[in-house]
Length: 305
Length: 287
Picture (cartoon, rainbow over the protein chains, first blue to last red):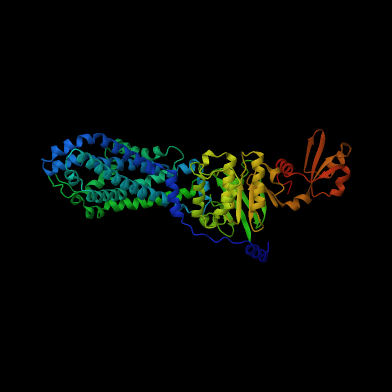
């Protein structure tokens, strides 16, 4: 075909105006479509918590009357329990969801061969993998945060209504769960966990991009094998300590608590300067970045299973 | 500009050679049938052209290197492969939203107009659709994209005759114009014979035959020979001979029809018959 005829046919066809696109946004949307547990699981956990609180609500007036004469710390320890448990339960749910999400994110699309459909569209591997990182480290924590706050608010309202119906003042209840401060503290905990657990998310995504089957074994067995091999061969536990540090190490970096400290201001427990200055955080983030780059490389090279 | 240009394109998987030095040039505006037995290297060739696998040798698709420029290349290239299934969890309206959201050349109204002619509901999930409907949906998405190259790898595998016929009719009537290029592989060769402009036979990772349909029609002649003339016909050097209902059918390459006409019935062979002849012939005999 000559150049002139190419030009002609190009001109003859009404060229559809290239519409604006946002591949990253739509890649995130499609993750939420596909993995509905991202929001369903925290909502179900929240529903169970509210149900449990509702059943126990009949005991609330008696509990508040009992605690009114206790010192503030003991009072808070007893009245704040349901609210902290709520945050704990929904956060744990979010962690489990994020764990399985990362493990499936680059594996399922290869197993059901839809990866070829995704790759038939002008979306780069980098955009795709980063959208999955974003879901694991931003969308899921955001869902956990919002669902937890909504749940705690509903519980406060149920509590207030029950107390009012029994002629007990709700002031003690609200005083022992300072909602806004607790929300700020919770946001801080979530940010700390996101940053601290980023290399774990990176590792799971890499396994997800690599495994041909049973991704969960690839994720768990290598560290476990290293721990056992090290214990037998060298009688040391460096790998085990490293894993333990990565799972739990953030607590002692991000918070400071001594027995007998007053709990008057929960935010006073946070030590962000200590956390953000710790080498453990930054080395972890560097490892996370390397693992994500490797996952992008693998997605480009791996074929459907 | 050639739509696809390959020189010495090679791909090996471990010890097996999938592509053993392919030289191929596909001009714009062609409908090329890529024909070969299972494991011949068709899909590997297409995967290389779509930037799905790395390769050795030279390959340019629309002037770009598909391996390094896949994401931009996909603005101008679409593909439907039997193996590139639409995600089963996706709803039809989600598929429309997503493609509209990521593809700058997607015309949603066009896709919706096409879907309106089918039984597909917008709220259905892909897993609820029949295989024929999934292909219709995929075709609706692809036809609404103003692409320069469309690659179809066994697009109608597992579909019944009605869907297959409708698929190619739609493609030809509503999609193809001479500024687009289509490459198609299928085992149902006879169904696409009428729509092709060019064909390429591939076997053992090599191109065995590469010609336009015009050339095919003038070059190859099939002769249903009268029994008495069999010896005379054989003397003209057929590339293949087969028996059908007790009669010998001989296939000739570049033999004058005038010479053959007195020996029996002469006609243009089907691609399928030529394919069998070429694939069973000694290497290079048909070139």
